[in-house]
Length: 200
Image 1 (tube, one colour):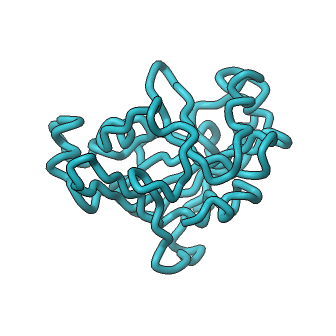
Image 2 (cartoon, helix red, strand yellow):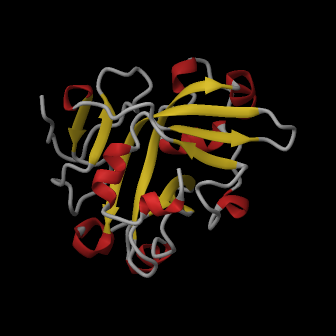
């Protein structure tokens, strides 16, 4: 997926990323990949979450890089993977919250040993560790870079296949329905929305 795909409103971009494949290629050439099953949108020009709590002004500024580039924010000391959206200078992004592992599951378990395999990538920090990502090496690189890139979904998911909720872990902007999950997928994170704003 080219960087230009991310140059617009992060809300439909987040919805459209469901079903896309995140691919990590190790130095050895081994591929680790997963299907994206949960995303969240952050759009600071109209998003109260960007001006309060963990999304303070300095952190919002970190999101204002060119669209289609990887960036990270830290939550409770853990790195979370995002893709920048909108033109450079406008802080907006999509957070990748959960993956369904496809390739390289054994290596993922080596990077992040877990007792229950479903816990391997069912959260935003979990997937970063399972893929062995180093934020210092990844931040600022393009989403179509050889080492970490996105493959488009085979086709768009219809509305019946997508669950829409409020986002997780925020106070301001907690009513915005900007979290998207693949309905019924067991790899979606167990986190509860900040407000019970669900579509049923």
